[in-house]
Image (cartoon, rainbow, N blue to C red; front, side, top):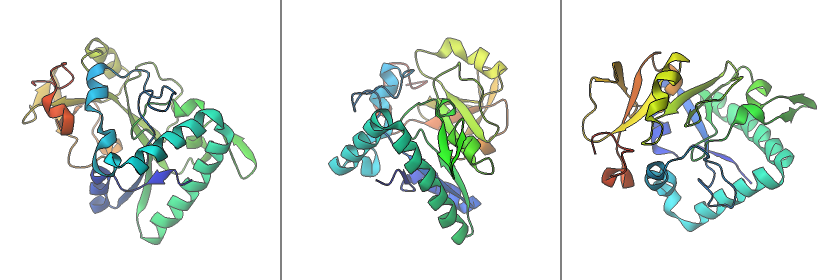
Length: 230
């Protein structure tokens, strides 16, 4: 079962800068019977891009459910496949003269830093430390993630239920992604706003900023407060 893909429209924008993003899509929330988005708010779940693009097709949804169930029911087997997929992805990117980067929480919010794996017979605390020369990045709504590997970049994702966490998250050095209705403002909560729509390469964002995202899909009709200014 192939775990990683490069079919995400937004991640493809990074190719113009020489990066090829490989993304893992799981079944969000508890669609698979297992919770993969413990910090998700109602607004977040309703605006989820799980059904965007190819995600609207039943075979894609079924595949995401199978991947998620395997992660929880056969973790060692799943991580073994993930290691193999990362190795294959790196070779593919290198053949095309691209820099491979990886986003494992395309439609989930899992603490990958806590899940061990084995590579070439050696056990590692997580997949990032198994591939220290590669870059991994994700969005997260979990403010208390710890022991993050140096090659794993996290951007905190603001929702209608975690606004009170922003100051603490910023003090810890994380940027914050905020979804806005209409045009992006110049500042939010006293921090400069940079566009997060141009590419998905969050590890290239300057530190100490708000990553502004414009509302898309179901989020355009949001009334929960998930979208700022909606």
